[in-house]
Length: 350
Image 1 (cartoon, rainbow, N blue to C red):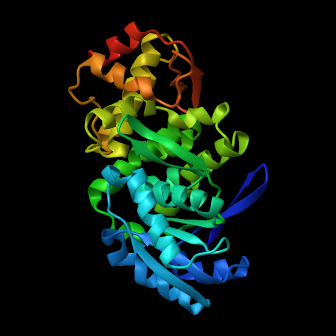
Image 2: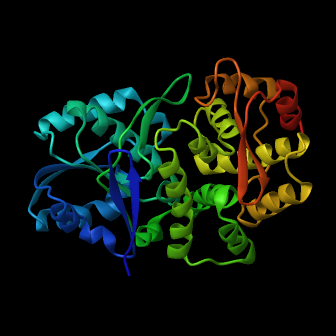
């Protein structure tokens, strides 16, 4: 069964199609939406080996003339240089302003290809086909695209709403266990933000993947519809991320994002307990679930002062202060400005 989740934003809407086997329907769904002619499939070697040909066949069968474009895999290549290389390939593929760019891959690829689509010819249509659990529940939804600078993550980017998002749980069968595990860090985050039933189901054991995706994506959709351009409430989706992005930067992006988020969730909960915003029981539940899912709960052994300094480039800062997203309970988080440096350092020193 294919489930459709409609996402609205100020100037329009787009569907998220969720269901086993939906990847093979991409071409027809694009054609039904009024697209035709040339298009580009941006992927990488690891993902393309498994999923590019079925997607290309789907596009050809629907009358498209697709070109496969590969970029290098990994956060280290989420850069302006990679985007510039895509521009050259878009031109060589003779894309025009109605030529869809289809991003087939994980969050890094979706962010990079999405930013290229947002800026090429001042914007061409974008289709997101996430192939990792993390990208399915988070980065593929909401329209945020961008790349990193040496000073920090996602410092250059644009809002680019996709024409559609295609989420096929079957592609997760080829995902390495370590990547699936990392993606669960973001799923837990969504449970803490606004899905206590999802959090409880993970505590209890095995969860149907389609149900898990539907529930986790639902959190993201509710938040981004309320705040499509990250002017307020959408910041709650960054729960754990102020810590996580600092850890990733200091680790030269060799730390998986979902793993960093898991550590960041614990740090955020510890900070919330220290400041009196949530109970120790909530912290214990978060740590116990992450441990059950085989995710690290202790941050990397960086000096606390280094982590604080790395936070200085965080996009969520306002002026000279940092906003922290902290839990009050499972399913209830809030935004806290002006958290004292001493309190953050105390948490990092544990």
